[in-house]
Image (cartoon, rainbow, N blue to C red; front, side):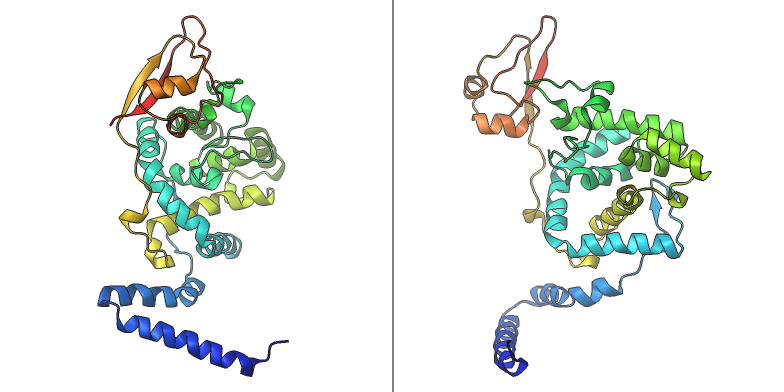
Length: 302
């Protein structure tokens, strides 16, 4: 066992290094460093705002909902690696997502649902949901996304976001509010409808649902709160630290099959890796194009 009196010299040594470093910092750098040193205390004392909204709809705060929101704020504020990456990825993906949401009449707050779903990455869940919006295969195909051995449009940011807009709009029309639409997006409309009918409730915040769905909207709200005010939660990410937005692309319309995508990439002046980086929906080494069909492949402009 390590005794406390043996730790005191170590603490003193570390404190001395920190103090010496502060002496050489500019006033702005000192303020930034001091903010980091106060991070723990400041996060602990943060309380949910009484005037929180999701998609323009007020979030009722009572003993239950306050605890649920505080949990998600605490988890995401302390899960620093994930939140830092979310801040960086948002700078890259949000301009595309925001435009599509706006064009389709979906509240801007749903862009934070994409973070809650996937961290803005093309991940695969244990239930085989895939892509930025975590579509299951059946729901994806119902919303017009193509999935086969060579293509998975759940991994196409624009097309999957457009499909998510259509799906969210369906859920809104069915359940009467954007908050309910978000809850149903997470658990599925059949189970959500059954919960409403059995419990004789009409509002997400009053439903007793599984833990994942119970946390879902609060997770979105917490992510929105932290990404909207990162410095208040101890996150300081400069513009140079964020991931670059997408470059300008030229779109190559492909109406004939490509037997070797590596050759196609090199012919268009990029590597195979970068072809897949900008077109992650191409999941094979070739692309078969059916008669009368065509695909748009993005090639970054030099």
